[in-house]
Length: 203
Image 1 (tube, rainbow, N blue to C red):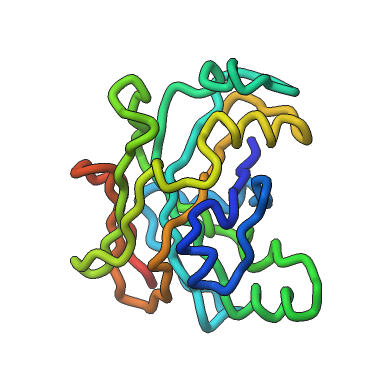
Image 2: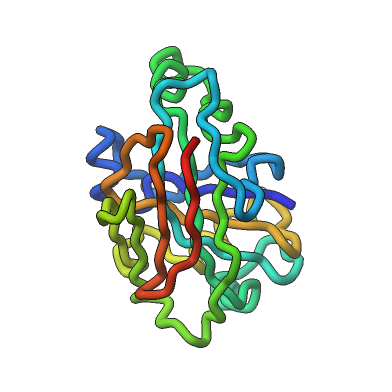
């Protein structure tokens, strides 16, 4: 099972981090050990002093495909979930400043929160999915799929040029603006519309 994460897919988020807007999807991988066990707290790793939350809509692939045409991409997923791409921002910035890969800032154990449940896409308007993140009861991020630079089908088509997509693969589709740090004791809750998708305690 692969975890594929799309970067800079919301213009305002790219701007808040001072990044350029890309002309094609930017993606990186997390290992399967990045999946945060369901119901477990997120433990801040001892190698970072600046862990950030990034809430994202998540696609779960339901059949194997390679070189998928965009007109068929919608048949490769049937559900939408919600997750957090936890990021060691201090590690990422150090790596980027030296021109080094920054997977260790993104793919460490527990860095991929995922919702317990997924929502059937037939129950959603895929071009108008509202989602949000609360920290300690206050909203810190809000986004909508209509604001994505690259939609779900475009993302699947592009990734499948490079990697065979397999059943169970997860695609994190990018985060809106409002990312920020977490500290021990914080409580995060993620929502699609009004539906609570996950909650996690930071320790």
